[in-house]
Each structure stands twice: as structure tokens, then as C-alpha cells.
Image 1 (cartoon, rainbow, N blue to C red):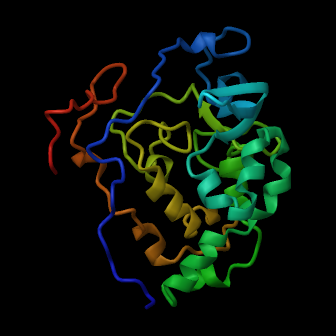
Image 2 (image 1 turned 30 degrees about the vertical axis):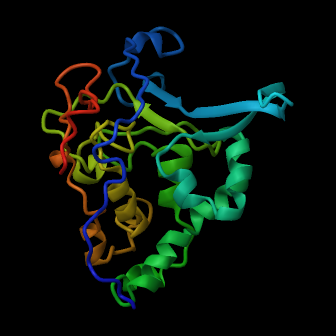
Length: 266
């Protein structure tokens, strides 16, 4: 029955170890010319990353039950921005999207401009987001956040714009200094060092994206739009400060893994 009742968030990986590859690299090894830009407006300060997974094209189960893999490697999964595949791409096109490279993401533009999740928010919570329900323009804010980066002049002191090529990439402006008082809501809370400027391990990316989908970022590109009051109250119901394995103060920052005999129950 709509509207859906309030419910606590569920941390699906709580009390489980998550495999991580942590690499610490000097910034001047990431820029094309080996520089270490200090000006956020300098294009050299930007890096973009995405990860992909591939497997061999053919898998043969032999008579002795051994598996033989052969043929060229075929990409079967990729991700740049968190939740892009899960939220932006329709179920019937997820395999297609996973097989493509970011440079080909123009074909998925319509799904970013016209968000199914944003529409469903107005369906599941009737009357809660009237301004969002009445907004029919293509979501230029989503395109900027996820496909091109945010141009300069929109957010004071910040940009991670990489050009007109539409691509799902995790973009980081390395000239933005570390936050003295980090906020898990990143740029939405005025913390320019947080998501969608890269992604820190403690950033609450799901809440950030929920609020963006609900319309809080539309005024960045369309000042005529007024976000619904409830849009800034959206949350996934989780509190990153209450995780069972606290973050470390130095690299690799992620908490110490649990062992099989010492796993907290709550």
C-alpha cells in the first residue's frame, strides 16, 4: 500500500568481509604529464577510472568434469559510478551495457535523462514529491553528474568536467584538498572532496544518489526548479558511523577483516 511505511535500512554486507584491492599511488603518477596540479580548474587535475571484468568466450566441460576455457576474453561486467548500472540501466539492457565500453554510453543517454527510479518515487509516494512529478524536462543534472562530469561555474570551487563525450566514469579532481570535517553526503553537504568527486570509502553514495534522483540537484542546471521538501530527507536508513569494523586512520583505511571466531553479532 502506498505510500510505503518507514523501515530501517538493511546493510547487506554487515559483518561480512569484502574483498578489496587497495593501491596507494602518488598523484603525479596519475596525471598524463607527471604534474601535480593544485588548481581545481586545471584540466590536468582530473582523472577518470572504471573497472571491468572479462572471461573467456568458450567454456567446455570435459568428460573428467574438468572445465576448459578457451577463446578471446570477453567483457561481461563494468562499473564507473556506483549504482549506475543498477539504477540507470533497464533490466533488459544490463547485459548489453556490461559488454560495452564507456565511450559507447551515448546510446544509453535517454535512460539517464528520464529516470525510471525518479518516476517510481512519485508513484510509490504519491503527493510527497509534487514538484518532481510535474517536472518533465530531461534530467541534465544526471547527465552532468554521471556522464560528463560537472562543469565549472555550477558549484563554487569545483569542477570535474571531462568533455562532451558521454561516459560512465568515476571522476576525481585531485586538486580538491582533503576535507578537514568530512561529510558522508559529499558535495550535497558542501564537502567537495566527497562523491561524486571520486568516492571515499565512507561516502554514503546510496543516500546521495537517492536525493539527487529525488530532485535536489536539478537547480544546479535549472534554477527555475524548486526541490520538494522531502527530497533532502531521503536516506537509505544506514549510519556509516556505526559500522562494526571501524575505518583505519591511515592506508589502507578499510577496517581489519573479521576472523571466523570473532565476528560481532550486531
